Image 1: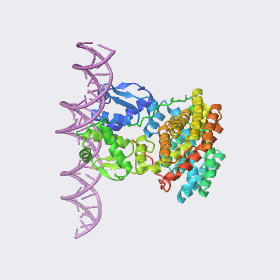
Image 2: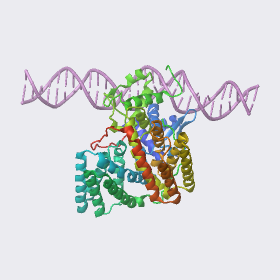
Image 3: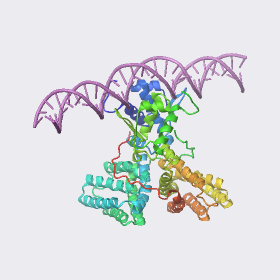
Image 4: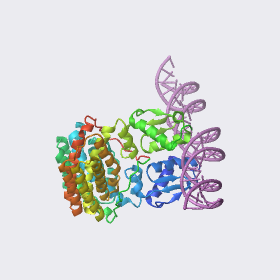
Amino acid sequence: MLTNMSTSLHHRAVENLGTRIVGGSLPAGHIMLAEQLEDELKVSRSVVREAVRVLQSLGLVETTKRVGIRVLPPERWNPFDPLVIRWRLAGEGRGAQLRSLAELRSAVEPVAAELAAANAPAELRQELLEVALAMRDAGKAGDVPRFLELDIQFHSLLLSGSGNEMFANLVGQVAETLTGRTVHGLMPDRPRDLTLQWHLDVAEAIFAGNAEDARDAASRIMRRTISEMEPVWVEQPRVFVPLQRRRHSA
Amino acid sequence: MLTNMSTSLHHRAVENLGTRIVGGSLPAGHIMLAEQLEDELKVSRSVVREAVRVLQSLGLVETTKRVGIRVLPPERWNPFDPLVIRWRLAGEGRGAQLRSLAELRSAVEPVAAELAAANAPAELRQELLEVALAMRDAGKAGDVPRFLELDIQFHSLLLSGSGNEMFANLVGQVAETLTGRTVHGLMPDRPRDLTLQWHLDVAEAIFAGNAEDARDAASRIMRRTISEMEPVWVEQPRVFVPLQRRRHSA
DNA sequence: TGACACCGATGTGTGCAGACATCAATACTC
DNA sequence: GAGTATTGATGTCTGCACACATCGGTGTCA
């Protein structure tokens, strides 16, 4: 072992291969041999094997005896896995990934708001309201970093408050899109008054237990968000997978 | 090695541990030792280590030197992974899992319909229309198995037609909920006329490129679906995870 | 005497090397 | 062309060395 630093070899191997596959430099159909990977990554057989097993569970590769380790096409990847999402965001697929996430958000958040209005515990409703108020203050003051932080917190609370663990799990991805939007300079210098008001509307409706209003206000935020972000993914080709048989994975 | 049959040792090890963890017989915080797992599963270290690595990538366990392999609480599991979903559906969490999936569907399908109306290729729109018509026939004839098959095909086409790979990836899970609903005897002997009509409405709106109508009709289907399935998950406690820091996974 | 900081022993995951088993694609035989 | 043998890759097992977090003992100081 030559250079060991803070991250395990396994981790680095997964990261290396995952990035290259998702990034496209290892195209679908490309075949690698375990032994070749040992040489290339300068690690032992066990490290390679454990890494390949993980990539296999993500749907990035499959192994066949007498053939080797075959890179699978994107349709086979698990698009919900945090690793895959991160790798896509870091590479060529960034635009398409941001669009997918934004569309997913636009679908989920209104329903999450609806569920939160019906089910969220009292403290969470209270906190949501406070965050919305703080967002308004930070927004009107033009404090962009603070606003971003509160924005993430708001949408995290919303998703958690739904009581749906799948929704709650999207917190990380939503944070990613929100920061990405700011980093890409897609946010106006000072959040629009309407946006601030809609966030307050969501929080108040949830606080009051009004599911329909919460959903409608959240929908408005999502529509605005989508329209603001569209410039990022213009001309990203959509992929229509022609009714493939889904495996049970493995 | 005593009994080797059709599935690899690795696969069986993952399946064994995954089922037990998700099923609850290995509770959060429980600590296992690699050596102990070798004895228990009657496999070698390499098999155990590769299996543990996969479970780690799913968020089911974490490993710590000098401590062992620790089972993680459900909030840490990746709720979107097909394996985790399958294990949950097979065990105690079945009700809660079905609810989560149904809520996710109810969020996603209307947006998918909207996107399909705007983007789907012509052949897919055509096929969707034909399937909807066939559903009507099978429904009126009271042919339940045929109807289920077409229903799955309809919703699969809808999700694929959105051109969003995350939506498209939900096909398997949606099929699971649809069959589950039928198996659990939650379907009326003969699908309601309104349901059949709404499916046709969705197909026609998408065919005509009318996004709003497609979304509204899909929403109606989803509301009906939720209300029909609610009996399955009555009294399932919701979990509100209190603003936990999401790791970058690994 | 008691509390605390230090430090080494211990045990566990991590990584390595080499062997044999298994199985499917290919080549060969008839 | 069908059946069989070969071959080469992954699958599995094992013994070893290392890194390092934890625990317990020891020494110091108050």
